[in-house]
Image (cartoon, rainbow, N blue to C red; front, side, top):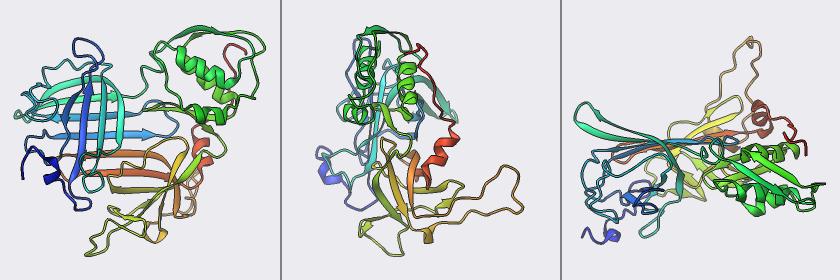
Length: 366
């Protein structure tokens, strides 16, 4: 068993060996676009301890994440960034953080787990925990550069379709915005209403994209890949995972396609269910929204108070299949936590209504 060949130290035990990678890519300065890889192997003897807390929300522009790297005041001793001192590296607002996590049995070397976070740094903090451990805390905020810190000043010609407008706004912004063209074209077809005259854009591109969505009764939000758009009536995708608790002495990670990874007991909520599972990077917020399933026999029913307090409604019936509207990934590379908290709803329209979505006119009048 040698350190130079990671394939010899990869775990084949389901839900045991952790695979993860934290990469920081500076966007300015002499090291611009040169990624700093903190670690890429959970069994690496010199791997730094990293904790993470990542939150993804449907229909929300500002996802957030926090990464804490312990005792990084020294050179990285192995991997592609060996010799770099993370505490002394220029890590500042706007630098891009990418974090991947999963299990080695699912993603054996040289494969890597899917990224569960790609976003810009908001700010960093250096401190000491209990005087002994030095910490580098990295706070990230998604889409800030694409929304509140973005600007557009351009003119689009007459007879431009709404799809063309969306693509124009995204590409001409000071910080270009990524869009899924096939998805946008499905929601804003080229046969849609065209501009009767040329149109000038001045200000936040986010404002104009939101106006396009509202005018067509659509939902829009940002994720790590850019701007998402989907139907307000049925923004629901396919079933991506089915979960169940592991039985006593069960070794396989899946049985008949069901992942035996539930931690604790799923809890029924007023809109659906809350599920904690061993970290699963395949369940993430994207358009269309994914679905997960868990048998109602494993779910703890929500208590129903009587008489009902004013304004409170009874939890919806459990169906066993839920639309994912929120995922929290959190873990410790040297601790027990390595989980995904999934928030699912049975009736997506109720969740949408709670967000207060309503039609808004284009601020420019077109």
